[in-house]
Image (cartoon, rainbow, N blue to C red):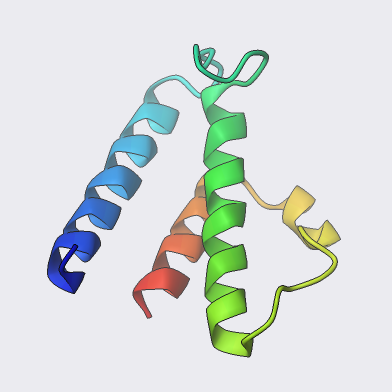
Length: 87
């Protein structure tokens, strides 16, 4: 996949998840039994931040996820992770 296409797909995925979580954060995620859209949003944000840290530092960040993430709203984690990947 070309880099520009990857960035387009990343933006589309981020924007779609952002739209869905703002519409109904408590909606169930059919493919993730027991998860809500807010849970999925938090998870994706944490994954984005993990991958950005691993690329930046050249190593797997540990421990993961950091405890302070629990205090952040799922949308804040998602947006922060997306921005870190774009950077």
